[in-house]
Length: 323
Image (cartoon, rainbow, N blue to C red; front, side, top):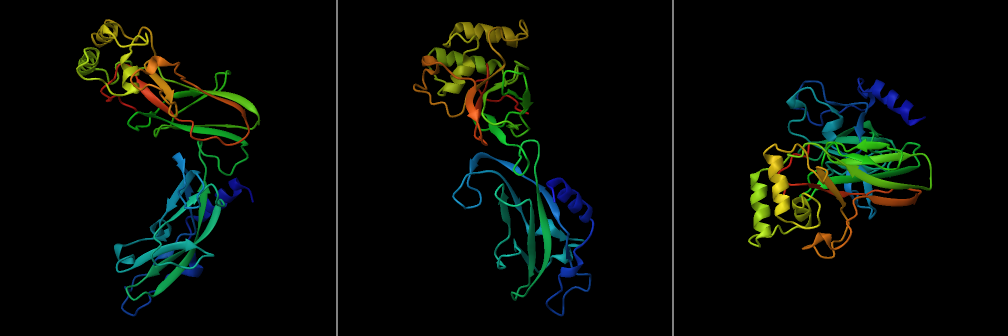
């Protein structure tokens, strides 16, 4: 059965209850209302793991995951349906563990998984029902589809806030995707062995995050009173992209704040530096050529972790909106 047909079958079944494995109250004084039932199944969308890391304890990095809980699979009508009970979840082939209150699934798992949901009373008596989980992809994550090559990454500010709406180009054809609200992006291609250049761009709202407070902070840095203390903040202060921070940057930024200019004269509104770029001298980020793209050669597999640090030019106080 294809993934698509599996989804359709499961979607059609979601309105039904799995009647052959009901919960039955283990003690005589249980509520007289109908016992809770398991749903036939649910669909959960995989979420990108950024940065990629081991989320399921198998000592391998995972690029996508989903976490599920017993309550996700129960037909709950009234609070009394769960009062006085605890619940656990396990794969149908595994031994029930009363303390296991969630499961984590990754791209290593099958798309449709049979699960048991257990209800336990205070004396340790348990009853179970069977249900199904269908793992679903989205436009960023293709764990199970026919795509043969994929690349993905995360674009965020220095303090870790994902930047939404960055246009990310990946070849010379002008094809691009935009970062999602959480700052993640991904490309999918059917051909092996091609070269790509990941090139993020965002040039709008130049006044975003820029105030007179930034002028004060840049002035203190120039005078040696209070260094900015970060190569990314120093790049933000280099408004005219001259390779240093000077009074000329203050003048250009002030013209922007006073609405004399409506855009930066020598820079885009945002700059993007590969997150793994090692500054040999963080106190002088211009000491070497700064890459603002990531080049990939002969891509033949899934490559994740193509992350960038987003620098909002002029905003050294770090309060630019990212959504």
